[in-house]
Length: 356
Image (cartoon, rainbow, N blue to C red; front, side, top):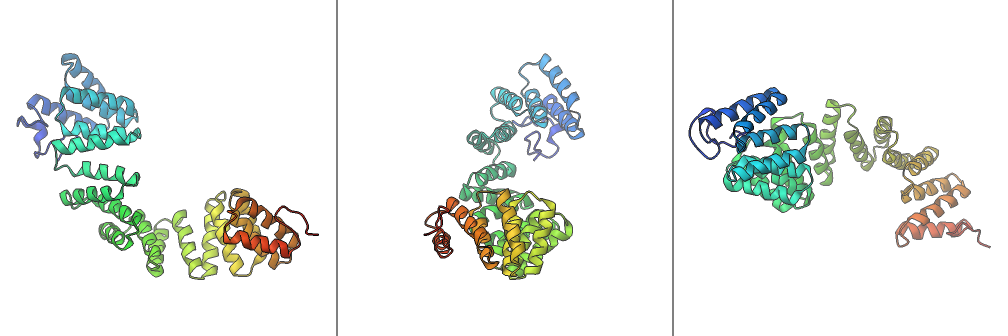
């Protein structure tokens, strides 16, 4: 199917078949001309020719449609919406009009109308897999994973080579904690494109969720080999190393993540955990302090810092950190009970006063 014209007949843009997508030869030739200009990026010429068509025929629905396409290219989605709507008013059975207007609604975060338009496009052209794929993404992004899976299934049925739907269906399965099925979908993408880093990252995460750490590491290693500065892969690989007790490797990766983004509090926090496990308490205290500076609401950074301060016999610093932790933490959290016990043992209370 030609996505620009909404036609299902091969080479139909230049024919005179008279179908609802193509109309007569004159209309088909106009669409073929617009598509050619669109592919060449000649949007100014497109606008001029649309204006010329509308001057001669103010009810030329395809001229409004293509003018909407140009508006969308420039991210003027409100104008695109207006033009697509006018095209639909003039010809309300053309699937591509609804499909493109659905995309404009989606870009304007009007999810309800976007879903309605994709559904209307399916009514007039039930064989266009793109509408199922697009509606599936909307469902996925709005937490309606069961509906998303149904749409991606249909998109794949109509177009088995649509690897994007495999990737997104994998995301929907992962969101439902069906990680083994998600891995199968990500692997389908990687069978065709073994260096697709997004699929590698997602499959690595799914492996990690299933505690298949060696498989997860293999995927993250591949991503980092392809993109040495991919901070997401570096940080997640560091977490895998940490979970495996490979402290030296974890610290190296967290350090690299910090180099790439010094303002992110998370690598400092987790590197602090690795340093504490290594009994490098001064380094751990420094990292928990920095993590708390960058994210003052991270209660556990204060709790972990207090633990390390105690190990270094820095009682005043431990008291201050426990007290700050209690200001932020859920009073019912297990760490809160521990903090209160430690403050009492250190001769202080939760409010910062010495116990007489």
